[in-house]
Image 1: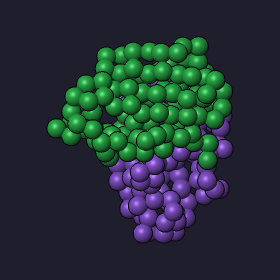
Image 2: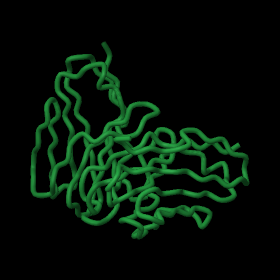
Image 3: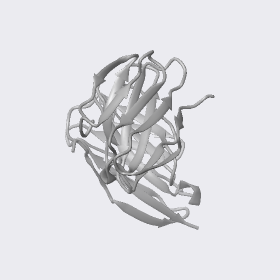
Length: 114
Length: 110
């Protein structure tokens, strides 16, 4: 496809379950970002990859959050032992260059933790 | 939080009127960008202004940047009902992440 693809679009998890959210960036895009967006708020930075290297993970809220991009394309955001406060929309964005130009966003994965 | 501030938080105007949104940020930047988000959707890039630029136009959009005040404004002229959305600014320092503001929710009434 031409755009950034995220799956699943909606995920309901019971508290304590592990979840994995997938992001397919635009082919050839070097930079990939994950953001968390609570209802009515702006996106909050989680982590940033340049190709397969995770250059910044300062926004990950706890060690239950883990992200990877092993081959420099598809990325997975994993949340272990989910808590209710993890309920949010998780947005993935990619950029052709090294984190300085326009970001192309996916539609997001809405996580609800019961 | 690294987020800057946007004001107003919410803005309601009539079709045909102009809408102005303001954004402040906290650190030095390489560029500042504005994005739009329709309810339940991802963000869409609108316009980018570099730190050495003061004003930029794109269609009905006009963006200004004041680096001395660490602030930017987005003006949408001749608004339409289809402009109803949330608008976010994002500040970017080269090679680092993009910091988004909390957004302005714009409602354009027909």
